Length: 273
Image 1 (cartoon, rainbow, N blue to C red):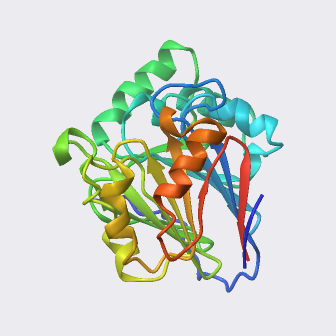
Image 2: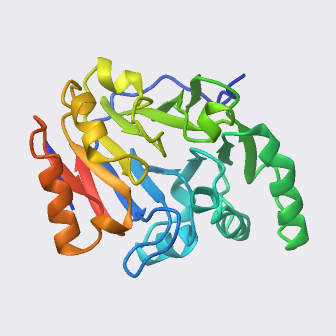
């Protein structure tokens, strides 16, 4: 039941248990490239099996986690979809918190979609006097499609899209499996929606977290209508869809889809059990 409220592999894998726990997704920040009067930049927290994972880290992800009462000690990994500031700009502050309040038993893996981003991020952290012990926070790279991470609780696979320079620069959607559930986080897509991730078109998806800024709804409806999605949640919300009237127009635009559609707000919680 659903309720609203070369890739670098993780090296500490263990047999995946059959978790019966709820998968909880908190959309911490749900705006497009700019902050708006009611939304901050993109970041979504996934919680399952006593652990948590972030998809994107737009500002102010650190403060939003604190306001939502989320503990940094539970965080295991961060997955950045692409290297635009509204998806990655909150990383330095987040890393500062992870270093300031270290975990005794595990390191947090931060996956950047472009290996070229690691050295500049390390330099910026040094310039701000943020010392990053490698056993506290590890900066890793997604260097192509396929398996990225598997800690026995959650497994993540990268699917390229064409958001960045028409595909000439790395940009990914992520397919996430946890507790027997399947989740898609599209990241930002191209203007014709043709790079909506193929795995979501081919196999059932319990929840799809999809951006709604870079394409018109009429481009998406024919593609989505054929997908075995159980629930669609739109985030990365463009200005025209803000407020009650804008949200009503967006919901109407997708009314023909054979599954429920919702619009995420900062701090919304979606559960899959």
